[in-house]
Image (cartoon, rainbow, N blue to C red; front, side):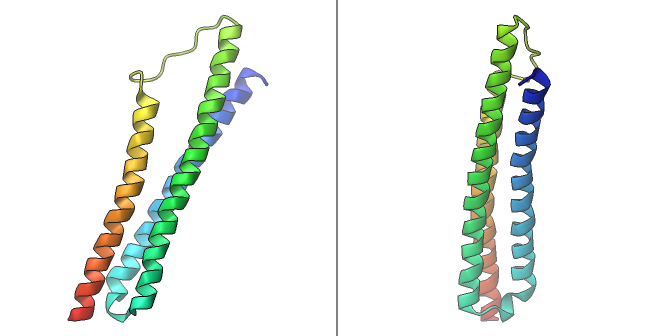
Length: 132
Protein backbone atom coordinates (compact mmCIF):
# COMPACT_ATOMS: atom_id res chain seq x y z
CA UNK A 1 0.00 0.00 0.00
CA UNK A 2 1.08 3.55 -0.60
CA UNK A 3 1.17 6.29 1.99
CA UNK A 4 -2.10 7.86 0.82
CA UNK A 5 -3.86 4.49 1.14
CA UNK A 6 -2.83 4.25 4.81
CA UNK A 7 -3.89 7.85 5.46
CA UNK A 8 -7.28 7.23 3.88
CA UNK A 9 -7.70 3.97 5.81
CA UNK A 10 -6.95 5.71 9.12
CA UNK A 11 -9.40 8.51 8.31
CA UNK A 12 -12.09 6.02 7.27
CA UNK A 13 -11.85 3.98 10.48
CA UNK A 14 -11.81 7.10 12.65
CA UNK A 15 -14.92 8.37 10.88
CA UNK A 16 -16.67 5.02 11.30
CA UNK A 17 -15.90 4.97 15.03
CA UNK A 18 -17.51 8.38 15.42
CA UNK A 19 -20.45 7.28 13.26
CA UNK A 20 -21.11 4.57 15.85
CA UNK A 21 -21.10 7.28 18.52
CA UNK A 22 -23.58 9.39 16.56
CA UNK A 23 -25.84 6.36 16.19
CA UNK A 24 -25.70 5.86 19.96
CA UNK A 25 -26.63 9.51 20.59
CA UNK A 26 -29.55 9.29 18.17
CA UNK A 27 -31.01 6.10 19.61
CA UNK A 28 -30.52 7.14 23.24
CA UNK A 29 -32.16 10.50 22.59
CA UNK A 30 -35.09 8.85 20.83
CA UNK A 31 -35.62 6.45 23.77
CA UNK A 32 -35.40 9.32 26.26
CA UNK A 33 -37.91 11.45 24.37
CA UNK A 34 -40.29 8.52 23.88
CA UNK A 35 -40.12 7.60 27.57
CA UNK A 36 -40.52 11.21 28.66
CA UNK A 37 -43.65 11.89 26.64
CA UNK A 38 -45.33 8.47 26.86
CA UNK A 39 -44.25 7.32 30.32
CA UNK A 40 -47.76 7.08 31.70
CA UNK A 41 -48.85 4.73 28.91
CA UNK A 42 -45.84 2.38 28.96
CA UNK A 43 -46.57 -0.94 30.69
CA UNK A 44 -43.85 -2.52 32.87
CA UNK A 45 -42.98 -5.26 30.36
CA UNK A 46 -42.47 -2.68 27.62
CA UNK A 47 -40.33 -0.52 29.88
CA UNK A 48 -38.16 -3.58 30.55
CA UNK A 49 -37.74 -3.83 26.78
CA UNK A 50 -36.69 -0.17 26.68
CA UNK A 51 -34.06 -0.84 29.36
CA UNK A 52 -32.85 -3.79 27.30
CA UNK A 53 -32.54 -1.48 24.30
CA UNK A 54 -30.40 0.92 26.37
CA UNK A 55 -28.14 -1.98 27.31
CA UNK A 56 -27.87 -3.36 23.78
CA UNK A 57 -27.19 0.09 22.38
CA UNK A 58 -24.38 0.68 24.86
CA UNK A 59 -22.81 -2.73 24.22
CA UNK A 60 -23.11 -2.28 20.47
CA UNK A 61 -21.52 1.16 20.35
CA UNK A 62 -18.71 0.15 22.69
CA UNK A 63 -17.84 -2.94 20.63
CA UNK A 64 -18.03 -1.05 17.32
CA UNK A 65 -15.98 1.82 18.70
CA UNK A 66 -13.34 -0.63 19.98
CA UNK A 67 -13.11 -2.41 16.63
CA UNK A 68 -12.90 0.77 14.56
CA UNK A 69 -10.42 2.39 16.95
CA UNK A 70 -8.25 -0.71 16.83
CA UNK A 71 -8.26 -0.77 13.04
CA UNK A 72 -7.44 2.93 12.92
CA UNK A 73 -4.58 2.45 15.37
CA UNK A 74 -3.29 -0.51 13.33
CA UNK A 75 -3.27 1.44 10.08
CA UNK A 76 -1.69 4.41 11.87
CA UNK A 77 1.11 2.14 13.06
CA UNK A 78 1.58 0.79 9.55
CA UNK A 79 1.76 4.36 8.23
CA UNK A 80 4.40 5.22 10.84
CA UNK A 81 6.40 2.12 9.84
CA UNK A 82 6.12 3.07 6.18
CA UNK A 83 7.36 6.58 6.89
CA UNK A 84 10.19 5.27 9.08
CA UNK A 85 11.29 2.84 6.36
CA UNK A 86 11.54 5.76 3.96
CA UNK A 87 13.36 7.88 6.57
CA UNK A 88 10.56 10.43 6.51
CA UNK A 89 9.67 12.04 9.80
CA UNK A 90 5.95 12.07 10.41
CA UNK A 91 4.08 15.24 11.21
CA UNK A 92 3.47 15.64 14.93
CA UNK A 93 -0.13 16.74 15.09
CA UNK A 94 -0.98 15.31 18.51
CA UNK A 95 -1.58 18.07 21.07
CA UNK A 96 0.15 15.85 23.61
CA UNK A 97 1.65 12.39 23.67
CA UNK A 98 -1.32 10.36 24.95
CA UNK A 99 -4.07 12.21 23.11
CA UNK A 100 -5.43 9.08 21.39
CA UNK A 101 -5.58 7.11 24.64
CA UNK A 102 -7.26 9.92 26.57
CA UNK A 103 -9.74 10.54 23.76
CA UNK A 104 -10.65 6.85 23.64
CA UNK A 105 -11.08 6.72 27.42
CA UNK A 106 -13.31 9.80 27.38
CA UNK A 107 -15.48 8.28 24.63
CA UNK A 108 -15.91 5.01 26.55
CA UNK A 109 -16.79 6.99 29.68
CA UNK A 110 -19.41 9.00 27.78
CA UNK A 111 -20.95 5.86 26.30
CA UNK A 112 -21.10 3.99 29.60
CA UNK A 113 -22.15 6.84 31.91
CA UNK A 114 -24.48 8.28 29.29
CA UNK A 115 -26.31 4.99 28.89
CA UNK A 116 -26.57 4.45 32.63
CA UNK A 117 -27.76 8.03 33.20
CA UNK A 118 -30.33 7.81 30.42
CA UNK A 119 -31.70 4.53 31.80
CA UNK A 120 -31.88 5.91 35.34
CA UNK A 121 -33.59 9.11 34.19
CA UNK A 122 -36.09 7.10 32.12
CA UNK A 123 -36.83 4.78 35.03
CA UNK A 124 -37.36 7.62 37.53
CA UNK A 125 -39.58 9.56 35.14
CA UNK A 126 -41.53 6.42 34.17
CA UNK A 127 -42.08 5.46 37.82
CA UNK A 128 -43.19 8.98 38.80
CA UNK A 129 -45.54 9.24 35.84
CA UNK A 130 -47.12 5.87 36.64
CA UNK A 131 -47.73 6.91 40.28
CA UNK A 132 -49.57 10.07 39.39
